[in-house]
Amino acid sequence: MKTTAVRLYGKNDLRLETFELPPLKDNEILARVVSDSLCMSSYKAVVQGEDHKKVPHDVAKYPTIIGHEFCGDLVKVGEKWANEFSAGQKFVVQPALHYKGSLDAPGYSFRWLGGNATYVVIPNEVMECKCLLVYDGEGYFPGSLSEPVSCVAGAFHASYHRRIPHYIHDMGIKKGGDMAILAGAGPMGLAAIDYALHGDRQPGLLVVTDIDSERLKRAEKFFPIEKEKANGVRLKYINTMDVANPSALVKTCNHGNGFDDVMVFTPEKTVVELGDDLLARDGCLNFFAGPGTSTFKATLNFYNVHYLSTHITGTSGGNTDDMRESMDLIAKQTVNPAVMITHIGGLDAVIPTTLNLPGIPGGKKLIYTNIHMELTAISDFKKKRDADVRFGVLADMIDANNGLWSVEAETYLLNNFK
Image (tube, rainbow, N blue to C red; front, side):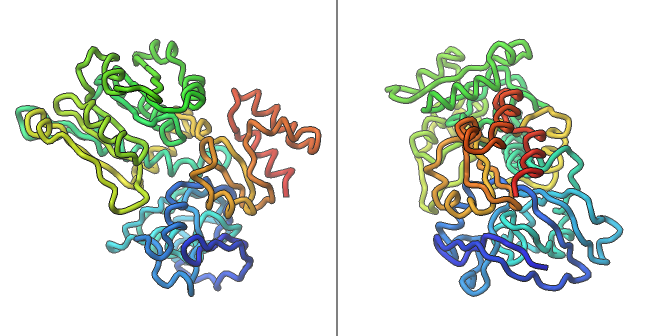
């Protein structure tokens, strides 16, 4: 079986290649990938190459397929797994395998498994770790985005609070408490807003900060203040650009009382320190954004650690339970992962997009691996209407869906773009 895939050979060395997959073993599964959403974590792996913790040291000789937020169809199931899976089922993969203590993960470490490919071989360890999950929802892109949503769910579950004066920790954000999401109008921040508002435990106050007014306007478009007020959450959006004292400004939202939960969605020293300054007694600072270097540091107020029991946590991805939860929330339309998507492209768009990901504005870049299409903002589809009528059809579908990508648009694209 031939596949076409984007493979990593070393630092900033990505190649789009067609090659033969090895013969399928009895304990493996052959699958067809349909969609993959690009992640900043892939950019970091590409930049760091063999120095990345999840990339093999011999990647130059044995290149790996990148991409870990993918969804597709099972094509052929090896005998060992024939009782659990069958050809034709849609699937997603939880990349955090933790197989025998290894950091190996799809999209980083495997020669034949990654999201930016037409066909892949799913190795035995993925099934052994219960990380191959059947996806029963509509379309494919919601399956791809169940992975980033699961990362958000994992972060919320990892936050914790103490039953003062007892030494008992309750996991999760404080129900009905005051919460701030800093640098929260990017794609992962939008997913966090959605989860905070519509998950199983809502704060009473949610403050979202960012330094980009357009991103904040887009966030408010999808999560209107008045609508969420009717649902019991006071929602505030604050632009901290050019604000001399952002901490004082944010604290005006709750009369200077501090916040029970603060999530930081950018690896910036000043933003981490802002989050620390916002914490109330027993406040939990959740550092979500992964730094690009191992030397990233920020100062914390240890006076407050001692006297106010402030504390810090962080997660890198979610687990399989988080993935199942995210798929369930998406299938029930409790959360809408389409708010994260701003660009669409084909497999030929992966290399230039990944190498330049930090500099491309907008949210998630969604790739369809079996089509050719340059990366295009969905807001620009109308501009291409005259040159290609298909973009006009897609633009009308998106306008009818509040400016969001949809299963209807995906179906049309898969049927009409090759």
